[in-house]
Length: 116
Image (tube, rainbow, N blue to C red; front, top):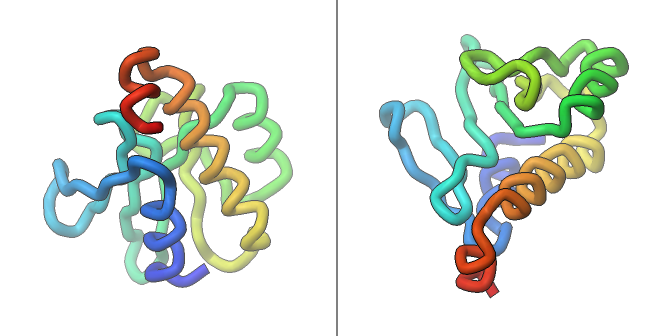
């Protein structure tokens, strides 16, 4: 998945906004003020931190060599995904969808209502 289409997919989520709290090189996608994705670069390689259910995070790490414990994140709840083409696009989108859904579920009822 190319960087432009990755960012477009992230920002198509209802209520998603892009912010730069860590500087101009590190876009963070949030919903309801909470992060669900962080994009960073390792050289030319695009990397993506995504929230994940701990059990599912472990399964993804075992199945995909490009899925690692979250870099600079709580490694139990976050994965770093190396966007190197080794993960099918639909699976990468599913990981993004799961991250977004977990963050939405953690928002207050009022914050979720404001998204509707």
